[in-house]
Structures are given as C-alpha cells and as structure tokens.
Amino acid sequence: MSVSKIGTLTIGQAPRSDITPILEAALPEHVTCVHAGVLDGLSEEEIAARFPVQQGHGVLTSRLLNGSAVVMGKPAVGAAVQKKIDWLAAEGCQIIALLCTGEFHGLNCDGAWLIEPDRILPPTLNALVGNRRAGILVPLESQIASELTKWKGAAIAPVFAVASPYTATEQQIADAARSLEAQGAEIILTDCMGYTGWHREICSQHVELPVVLSNQLLADLLRNML
Image (cartoon, rainbow, N blue to C red; front, side, top):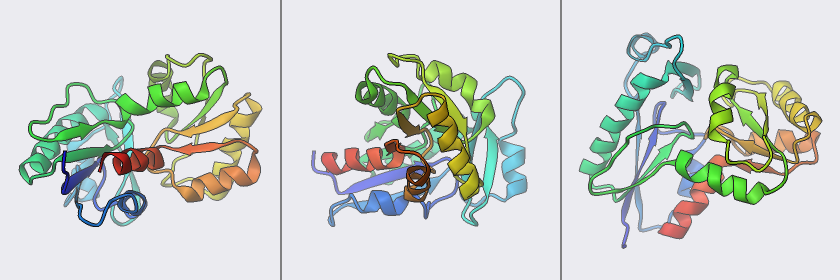
C-alpha cells in the first residue's frame, strides 16, 4: 500500500498543536497530512448546544484552538466523528487516524484505512504490562467507571488517577502520578491523546515509573505503516 495522504481526526479543534508535532515527526516527507476536528469552526456556546452532557451517558473532553478545554456528551460526539471520517475519506485520505482513545462503536470508513486507538491500545498495553499493575491516568473522574470495562483484559486490575491534560497544573499531574504509585502501579499509561512529553516529564520527576504516551504509540504505528 503506497500512502501519500493521511488524515487525523480530533474530537476537539484542528490542528492540535499539542499532538500534531508528534505525529508529523513520524511521517515521511512524501506524505501529506490533513487535520480535521469535530468542533472545527464552532464557538463554545455552539459546542455546548450540539454536544450536551447527559446524565447516564459517557463524557469526553478535548482541546480548542485557543487552548481551553471542553467537556462533551459522548453520544453526539460519536455521530459527528462518523461525518468527519466520511469527509476525510472523500478528500482522498488513504489512512485516517482518530486522535482520541475513547470508545466509539460502529464507525466505518469506505476507501480508507481507519485507525481507532481504542481498538489498539488496550490489548497492546495489556500485553506490555503483563502480570504487573498498570496505573491509568485519565482526564475526568466520571470516566473511571467506563475505564474499568475498557481495561478488563488486564491480568491484574489497574488503578486510576485523574488529571486533565488540558487544565491540570504541574502539581496536580505530580499528585496523580504519586497517587498511582501509592496504589501499587508499576507503570503509568496515559489514556488520552492530550497527554504529552511535558506530562511524562513531570511524572518522571516525582515517581520512578515508566510512562507510556498514547499519542506516541499512535505515531510509532503510523511510522511503521508508511
């Protein structure tokens, strides 16, 4: 498969200045990258109206171009993700990488190879961790319940800590890392594409645990496909 054009799709606004440099560093010079976002062109008021948080349903968080974070209801986001996938495929993207570790059921893509991190990261990281306890860093407290189902394939049940990659301070990131270590974690896994090398560095300054970035794993996968 000779690839000359790929697409990335964030559930926030594109381009993601925190993620795209990591991905673009993995791309050969001949590959063009089209960046799209579910929230492109929308104001915060429009986002709140189109993607309301509903009781009993999952939530997602992402980043806007101005650097601020938004929290959205997952059902509405899922429908919008499919529309953006269709648009990227129509633009001629041969590979489309979803820049979100959330679970989306029933996505499909005609004419392009769709990469869904949620289908790749849990089994890959469970195999990496083996019979050790993983510490999962998540953006929102309300996501932990669904994370327990997501990581059910782990040999040893993981532990969790919360620190938003978009709004948490350095101290809050450090506290989350120490919390995971205190709960018996032997490795930290970041379950959101928004965590960057800055977050990994802070964790490494406060705990002696390896830290795995989900966006770096995605970049390495793309590098090997191109």
